[in-house]
Length: 628
Image (cartoon, rainbow, N blue to C red):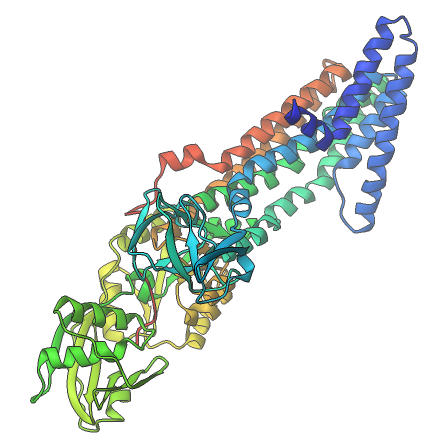
C-alpha cells in the first residue's frame, strides 16, 4: 500500500489522468454522460497547453523535440470529437514519461547500489573509548574499529592479525578475500564475522569507494551522442507523420482520418529507447567491474579499431620477482640481498616489495636505517649499520660507485644495481611475468573488431620486444616518456583508439586517447581521473568485456529506436486506410511504448553476460607500477 502511494505521488500526472477517466465512467453510469466529452476534452486540452509551453521553450533553445506530434494529436482528436482517444493520448504521453523514469531507475540499479552504500560513519578508537565520527572526519593514522558485517569507511591497513572481507561491490570478486596484518583494506568492503581494527591510510575523499562513487555520478549524468541522434530524428519523423496524416485526410475527405494517423505517431519509443539502453549498458559495465564515464564512451568502445597498451602493470602483473643475484667479488649473495631489502623498506616502488619478500623467504633480517631518502624513479639511498647503501638504476648507482658495470640481462628481465659504502656490490635480476590472460584478451579484442594493437612502454627495447613477441603485438615503442606516448597515440590513423594503462605516468595518454581505460584496482588516482573508463579489478580481460558491452549497448539502442520507428510507421500506414479507430490506435501506441522499453532494457545484459564470459581468470591480486 505504501509503495502504491509513493508511486502515485511520483507519477501524479498519470494518476490524475486515470482519475479523470474514472470520473468519466462514473458520470456515464450516473446518467450524466453528456458531461463526459467536456470533462475529457477540457482536461486533454489543458495537458496539451502545458506540454506546448515546454515544447516552445525547447524550440527557442534550438532543440526540435517530438512532443509536437503528441500535442497535435490531442488537439486533432478533440476537434473531431474523439474525446476518449484524446484522453488515451494524454495517458500515453504522461504514461510514457513515467515508464521512461521507471525504466531508468531499473536500469540504474547497479549504479545506485554504489551510491546508497557509501560509508557514512566510522568508529574511532580514542584510548579505551570508541567514538562514532563521520567518515569525512577520519584522518590518516586514526585507529578504527570495524564491527562484524560493517562497511569499511576509508582505505586502511589491517591492524588485527587476519580477517575476511567481501569486496564484491568494489572488485566484483564474489568470494571473501582473506587479509593479514598490514594488508590494504579498501573502503566499501564489508567486514566478515569478527570485529577488527584498522589504521586509516587515506581520508574518505581520497579512498577507493568514494572515488568510484564520484565516477558513477559523472557517468549517470552523461548523455550519449546516439541519444542526441535519436533527438535529431524529430524533424523528419514529425514531417513524415504530419504529411501522411494530411494525405489520409485529403484522400478520404474525413478529418477523423488525420487524428487516427497522428495518435499512432506519438513518438515515445524514439525518446525512450536510446537513454534506457545506454543507462542499462553503464549499469551492466558497473556490474562487470568497469565504471564507464558516460554513454558516449560506450559508443566509442563499440566503434574502436585500435587498442594501445602500457606494459608494466597492464600486460604484465607489475610485480617482478627476483630471479638471480650477481654479487661482485668480496660480497656474498645474502649480504647484497639483505642490504638491498633493508634499503628498499623506505621505497614506494613495486620492486621494493619483491626484494623484501625475497629476503624474508631466505630468512634474512632487515636492518633499520639511520636515515633514508628516495630519488623518484631512480632509486633509494639509506644509512644501514654505518654503511651507505645505494640501490636503483645503473646510472644512479654509478654516480656513487664509478666502477659499476652493467650486467647482461635476458629478454623480459630487468636489473637493480647496488653500491655499498662507495663500492659497487653487484646486481639483482628480476622478471615481470606476463598476465595469464593477456593473450586471450587480445584475441577477444580481435574477434570484437579491434584488429590493430600497439604497446607503449618506458622500459628498454629488449624487454618490450620480448613481451610484444609473446603476445603477437607488431607495433612497439619502448623508452617512452609520457609526452612520447601522447604523440604516438595522436599519430594513429585507425580510430577510435583505446589506451589501457595503470600508472600516474599514463594519465596524459589516457586523456589523449579516444577512450582511456585505467587499471584502477590499486588506486592510480591520476590515471583514473583522466580515463574515460576505470577497471576496478586487476584483470586486463575487462578491457575486452568493456568493448563487448559497448557493442551490445549500441546495437540494442539502435535496434530499439528502429523497432519504435518501424512499428509506428506500419501502424500509421494501416490507420491511413481507416482500419484503426483513434481510440484503438491510442491503445496500440501504449503497447508500442512498452515493447520499445523492454527491447532497450536488454542492454542491462544479464542474459548477455551469461552467454559470453570475458576470457581468462577473473581477478589477479597483483599491483602495478612503472619500472625503474
